[in-house]
Image 1 (cartoon, chains in turn purple, yellow, red):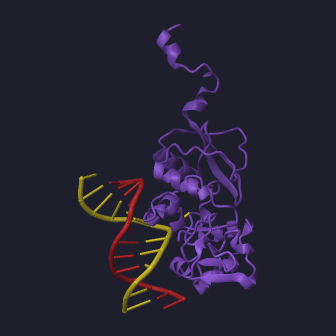
Image 2 (image 1 turned 90 degrees about the vertical axis):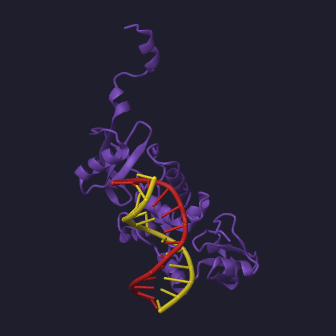
Image 3 (image 1 turned 45 degrees about the horizontal axis):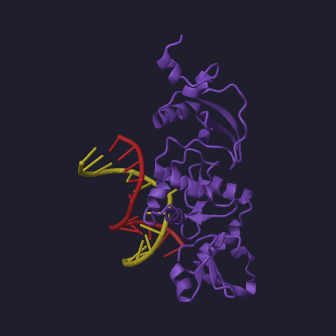
Length: 236
DNA sequence: CAGACGGCGTAAG
DNA sequence: TCTTACGCCGTCT
């Protein structure tokens, strides 16, 4: 009862919610695409997947997180970009990639190579794709905003159609982006400022038609005397 | 520990 | 334009 060692090792508030501290819980809740399965620790959401197969969810959870998972009978708040996440099970590279991805504004897109540069590993483009393919918390960390270098959407854990739906729902102009892809345009410059942006950067969208200058590569923009936008950091 | 495996990016056919 | 080949690199097995 008054074992000094036990007293020292036991946090003062461990009591009725002890179970909460050693097992994670899961339940269905709503996200931007409808119902999803969500697992949580005391620190935040640890895992999000489609409702398809709960058995696979639990198996995969155990394999990846290595923690027990029990059903949650409480009601779970809907998830969105503000939902707190618990990424302790991730490597530091994975966390960096997810953090950088989370910084992409709603309705905008950034290439995989952009994420690689942001985390300081400009050549790890493919590894970035691997991380996002396994994103433990899709819809919260918006990996649907990461596209290929040419502006095409690229693949998505929940299907390319879902990627398009999510972006459209956030206000992205997919037709406009597709137009740039078709034209081979990856940067938009303003000839009044000499600054070049990624096409979805909100600064790029403010450039008037008369002053908009399309570039097919960062090198082309640089050679034309342009510098990269400090906000979207196109890497040039 | 070596090798395989990708939501990539580019060049080349 | 589409396809293929290959470099790249963090993880997983």
